[in-house]
Image 1: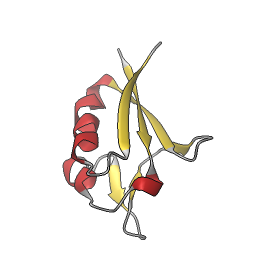
Image 2: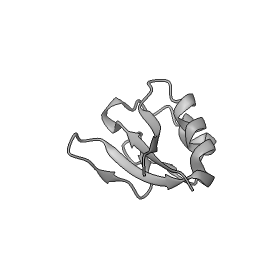
Image 3: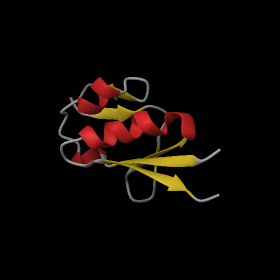
Length: 79
């Protein structure tokens, strides 16, 4: 089964909350008005990352597509 990596640039987030509307399983509204990616870890570049399975790819791709500032990327992880 394929694995995918979500990369989220929280600093770029403007708090449009579109990703939460599409996918509340993975995205939540934070107290500062931006969003958080549930279960993500901060990488060395200051962005947030989470590995997901193929079953959650489509809904997270949709979250990335509705982000008005393109702060969310979903890429296939080579195994």
